[in-house]
Figure 1 (cartoon, one colour):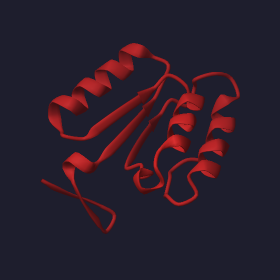
Figure 2: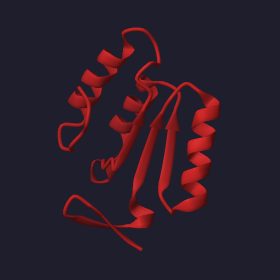
Figure 3: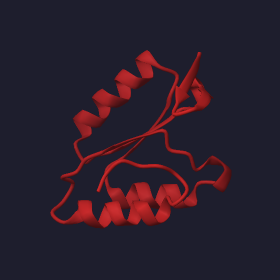
Length: 98
């Protein structure tokens, strides 16, 4: 199956979903739903810092994020720091957020 994100065509198996949330049950539910209903690659992290570290260490040719599900309330004040870190680490991709 081919998926269009914006004007770009992807194979379903190439779509990457990143879940950043400290609620283990919610992560398990989301991961299970995506894995049962799609061929997307699903990655999950319990903190924004874990996600940023993983992303920075990914090969440059593989640094595409198609969907990022981000818990805004991980810790007090962390969303602002995490958002700024993500923006600086991810200058080549589009993102939603403030």
